[in-house]
Amino acid sequence: MRVRKNQQPPTEEPNDFIPSAKDKPKRDAARKKRKKKITRRTFEKYSHEARDRLAAWRDDPKAWEGAKPEHLIGLFVIFHLHVYGVEPSDLLEDDTFLGARSSVAALLRQEFLGDANLLAEFIRWTWEREKETEKWYRERGEVRSFHMGWRVQFQSRAHLTKWRVALARKIQIAAR
Image (tube, rainbow, N blue to C red; front, top):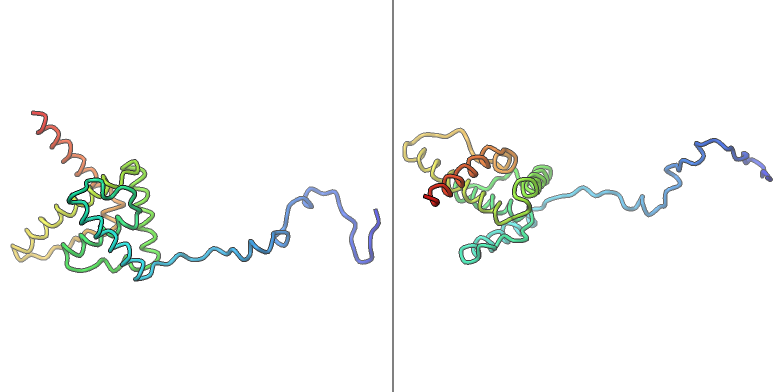
């Protein structure tokens, strides 16, 4: 094998077979991972689409079929605004929204087997209870320290257990 001037002869060591960073095609460098962002416009888009689905839900029990986690977050926002009178502004932060979206996707997959209609029903049930509790506190002029945040709704399984108990009781009563 001929070696040119200023060139080192090739070695037969195994390290020569490991590609280095400079061996990667340039297009990979151009494909840098972009940081995902949530804009106010995107946030409002999903909230608006959730409002449309909520309006259709009265007539169509399958209105949430095919809903994305973002739509279910939009449903959460609608109920939060209705019960408390304010938007959950923490969801406008990029990391928080992405965390909420991830939590909703996991909840949908793990607990509801991908059935967005059932998850929407769970969200509605939770907020109906929350509305009654808020009403009770307001009637007594008391200030409540708890509020239903996205982590309680989508990460904690406590309300999910209560919902399942309520469904089991409803089935037992209907079976009598």
